[in-house]
Length: 635
Image (tube, rainbow, N blue to C red; front, side, top):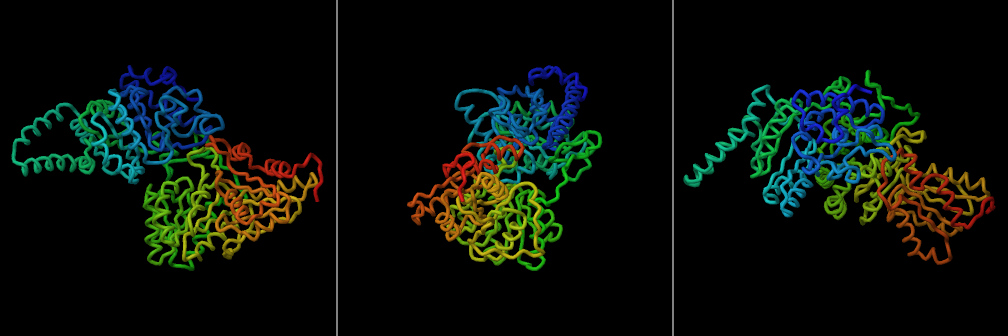
């Protein structure tokens, strides 16, 4: 445990508001040490939090949180914030079952006024808080902290474009520039200029100048306004934000509390228009292993604090993500029309491998899922074979484009949906729970779910051969099951599942990687004298009606199993059976799916246990359907 004498005195931000600058600097160092030590125990997002330590200290020092609203975009940088807001005693439960969320969460603390885990929502939410404040006659202040990566999403600009109209009071956006370096600070002169343009004297002079200019003819008024904005924009890079109606301050060094604190105080006093404070920070700041890492240790498992070495478990099987990237490379080597698109997640989706092999055929569009989907639609319309690799949970953000720009036009875009199902420590915000339902609802969509890594390879091959409609395949986070993958997998017959194990009494129909648990369930049933068939559906759309009707006809009970929300595969099967009259003869059926709740973070094994989707749950559902008692035999 690090030595933290000042931090030990801070239970809430109010305890640090009387600190002077030397004390704030010491506090920042102690918060950084505590963050490093805590994440070494729990794993999680490290680099982003280390980059905003001084900014976090300064914001809670200047603003009267929680009365003043502070919203962190995405939230993966919020660990220092949690340490300072009464949650230090639980910080080593981050991302654990029953512990603190890895993101901001309204139910967790009054200092988390808005929950976030998807990017680019902070300005819209902050503007909502500002409008609510104005409507209710309050005077509290509202601050949104957004990273430069999140500023690649159109939603951020939609909010900024609306800000001047939606609120007449104070609203601050802090642009945390830690990667793109929109306009890096240039030594002391930059800090001096930022302090100058945020100060009352400059703003007073500016207002006086405007009052004089307003008496001049209209062309002179416009010319003077542009001259003043462009003069500041040439030095600070803020012209664009000024055009959106914001008062721009910056860029300033986000680690220099001597300048950061007074500039934030100046900016907080600006109430006649929204203000954007451009802060430049270093991701991973203050921890050498993070500073030297290519990804600044953005996301880590447990690690040794001294060396930074992570305790990554050794697997005998490749991750599904790596299988996807590797298989796509194989296909692209023989088909020059294949291109790949992702929305700011090249390593998370495996497209970093594809990008190394085919840099000219790889497109990272930033945090812009809507654009990614329609961009793919355009390429598909002109003869290319785009593969749109976006996490299931993030593809939700581009759903209108999937419907309108892809599905209605029957364009052959291939959607690779990583992180399908539950995702462990990232919790409900990142779980891929809904894609079977929302993709399966679309006419013409071909929707597959891989049961293992060899099946994933076959589904990639299948999607690339579909040239007259959209297709999608889903696969989970984590490692495969260790099956052999063919050198070049053959495509599947569209809409055909497979029988994996033959039985007589009950049929278990699995979609996706619960197939292994379904086979274990069959073993459990066999030990009780109950014979079970196990089938892999492969396709959620189109369904293998021949297989499903056979299972219904030849078995007393049918159990469907999926890693998705209700209203998905099980519902599709029920509807198909009803339409074909297969339920009329008294077939007993159970649909096992994710529970109708947003599940909190935990280990994947415990999450699936809580969801009732492990082998013993499948076996129990079968016995319940059969009305079997312990030890009963059904041949």
